[in-house]
Structures are given as structure tokens and as C-alpha cells.
Length: 526
Image (cartoon, rainbow, N blue to C red; front, side, top):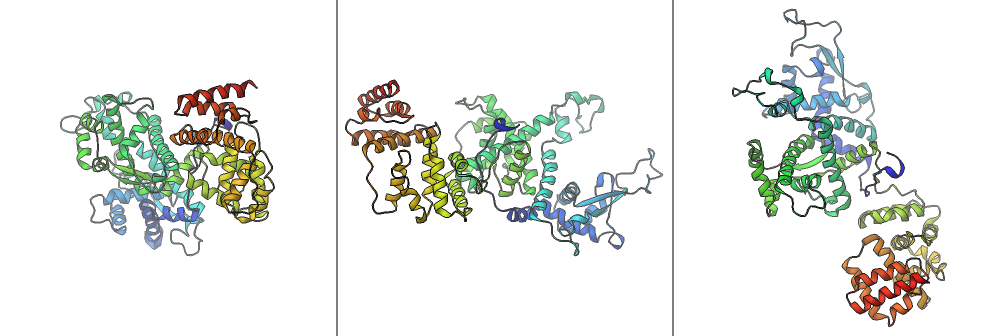
């Protein structure tokens, strides 16, 4: 995708690369992978490395040693955790696998292939990453290199998470598993397996994308609040125009929720997400085929405690970085707060309206801070120049300019005084000066007051639609100015007709609403 075809998402706030790199190194999976790589550096005769089997996996004895080295010896899942960490080290390139060219198969093996526990190679640490894995002669990799390493490993975990287990695949084939639990090879039909790898990967990407969007648009989620798993699953499945989900749709949501539960359990050790799993009792119900019961419960009223039983998830700051990096790779526009620091005022004013209030403030502060040479005064002049115009987007630019200038210091005052007589900018200049208690601020004439009123309402409608606050504003304006509509239709502003029509639509008094519509007709008939 290129140009206008690329989707644009709201900006997100990210920590520095150095902070993200520290988070990546602290994530359980990478931390264990690094530790096992250091263990491999010391392992084998004279520290030559660790013998490995086919595919670079640890042999059974080495796996036990690795689990013990990680302090996992007493845990039931110790071998699996150690194997995951070792595989992550191999997948990220922390470890290099060198196959033994002289080694051969066990002569006793009938097929001439190595047994599953026979060494066929050696795992040694990657030299270029030695600073991370215990080589005193190598420098620590840069934060960007650590993040690239983490992203490479994340891709393999995401691929694994999107792949169902062999048992799950067989479960979809009638007769594949006998009553004794043995696999019936005669019943296996690969074409009958209900699994589409591309579709499964897209579903997980959709879930992560929706989490990203919630983090970008909901201040509570951006601040650390977790998203209920049913809400996330529903956002992927329930159509936007569906008021009440059907039983069939609720069952789909329940199935998707349980699949996401499995996937997020796999992804949490990477540091991508913080996850509170689905209650084990509910997981057991799903395993026993009681999705319909779970779906029925989802369709009812759930209190906060009930909702938490169905799982809670959020993207960590590292996860936000990871999802954003993958979206950028896919060609999407995914801005971050700080991207506009070096941009011109025109681009700043055009982009800020999609920011949340907190993110807009941070972006504006960064933009001013980056203008050391011209200073606040030069920056204010640049903003005012960019705010001019009679195009459709101009009212929003001026409203955004006013928002940006609210963070400017007193050094900006001369720039505001320069535009006091400007029809387009004089109103916002007077507001800025009055708010700071400046002296000698001339009163606006009636034409300027009405022009500023039309401009402000046009900007608010364009950015916020027609909320209840607009109805109150319109009523107050009409009440405060006798003969408001007789004067308003004469305002020389491109949006006068549209603004008056909007006022007629939202004003609660029928007579005033009719007067607004008549005024809109007059404005358009000039």
C-alpha cells in the first residue's frame, strides 16, 4: 500500500529505545534465552559450546541441565520453559548452530538417520552479540539492535501462537483419534483439517491491531487499564451495525475468546502483553464442549468480577512498539508522539486533530522545544501563518492553532499583536491576549465577533460532530444576541450557510431553529 491507500491510525506515546530495550531484556523469554546463551558459552569441553540434536534442539540431558541452570528444576513445566527459551535463542540468532559434518547416524539405526537424542551439531553464541551474552571483549549492542533482535524472536512466537497443536488439528477429523487415545493413521486426511494458516494469522493480527487502536484512542487503556477478553473478541466478530448479538455470534465470540486465551498465554513471556488468563473452570468448560453455556453467560449482564474471570489483556509499552513495527512493515501509517517535532506548522496543524488531548499537548511541547533557533516568537508566527485560509479545513486549523498557542510563553505576544486586525486571526489573537491579562487589547467589532463565532462552530462540528455541548452553545449565543440570525447570515465566511443549518438542526426551540434554517438559505443565496 502506498500514498492515500495506506490506513492511518491515531498516534501512540512510546518510551525511548533505551527504555524499550531494557523492557525487552527483562521479558522472561528473552532473559532466559540470553542466560542460556551465556551458559552455552561456558558449556562443553573447554567451553566449546553445547551439543544439539536435529533442528538445534537440546538433547534430553542438556535440557535438564538448562532447566536447572535457569532455576526451573522444581517446576512441572520446567523442560518446556527451558526448551522455549533455547529455541528463542536459536530463532533470534543469539545462538549459531553448526552441524557436525563428520558426525553420522547411529549404526544401529535401521533407517540410517540420527536418533532424536543423538548430537548432530554444536550450538555456540553469535560473536556479534557477544557483549550481550558474556563476551568481555565485545561491546553491548545498541538499544535499536536489541529491539530488532526481540522483534525477530517475536515473529516466531506469533507464528507458533497462530498454529494450533497437532491434537487440536486431529480433533477436527472424525475418527482420527481412537477411544484408546491412539492415532488412527487410516483416518487421517490432511484436506479435512479445519485450519487455514493465513486466516489464523490474520485473526491474531486483528486482535493485536484492535488492542493497539484501543491503546491509541482510550486514555484509560493507554494509562494501563486492561481490556476484557470478551470485549476484544467481540470487536473482531460482532458487526458494528448489530445492536444485539445473536446466539450464533455469541458462540463465535466465546470460541474466539478461548483461542485468544491460549495465544496470549504463549505471548505474555515475550513481554508483548500483560495478561490475566481465563479462569481455569471456564477453560475446562470449553474443553468439554460447553461453549454454548459460556456464550449464554456472555450474553447476560456481567459484573466486574465476572468480566475478569473471562481474561484481561493489555499491550505493554514494548508490545505497543512491537505491533507498531509490524504495522509499519505492512505499509500502514502508524505515527508516534514526537514524530512532528521537526515538521512545519502546516503539517502540525493538519495532524493534531486526531490526537488525544494528552498526546496533543506532548506533541506541541516537543514542537516548540525543537525550535531553538527561531524561538517561541518565530514558532508563533509560523503557526499563525499556517492557520490562514478559506478552504474547508481552515476552521479546524485555526482551532488547533489556538490550542497550540495556549502552550506558548509570553515571548509569543508580539506575533499575536501583529494579527489583531486580521479578519481570520484577530479573534483568536484577542482571546490569547485576554487570557494572559495583556494590556491594550482592542475590543473586536461586531463583524469580527460573528465571523469568529461561525469559524469556531464550523471547527467544532468538523472535529466533534454535534454533541450536547454544541446545543447549549447555540442556545446561549442566540439568547445573548438579539436578532442573531438576521446578522449571522451576512457573515463573509465560507462555512456560514453550513453553520446556520447546523444551528437550526440542534437548537431546542422550534422558532429559533426555523429562523436558523431561513438564515442559512439567505446565506447560500447571496
